Image (cartoon, helix red, strand yellow):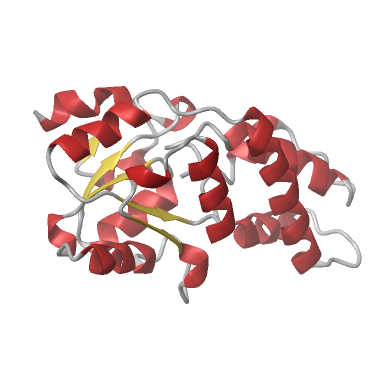
Length: 206
């Protein structure tokens, strides 16, 4: 969802700078890019392993990150270019459209409501409700099962390396839509296709 449906990565970066700053860890935007696409728990562990701080409260930090990011997304996030057209393309083909995100279910619902996208998806699901988060394929397999579509007949769009890894592991066809800062990163080469923007989706599907 973040970085694919909505341009919310800057909101997450803002949240990370605020929350990690409270424990004395000053993160730059470049630092934040190192953990793009990772579940929040992994982001916290990533930085704690590299620059540990005293008396860590990981649960509170996770809660604070979600709270800060949610507030920023509510007021600052914008739709990614080509998102509505991509959904419309799928609907015109009579495809079922699901959303599989690493974000919490309440955050997914908030984003869909904010941008009037709730009716655009037949089902949405959070990997936090699975035993394993991305890059494990569980969230994709659950969405495919609920939609009643064999996973091998699914086309998954992903913008993060972990997401692409999990999507490929699920057995689906995968289109990677990396951010411009990591478009050439070889971790995306495992996808079936790679495009620069959702605006390019129609041209590769026709």
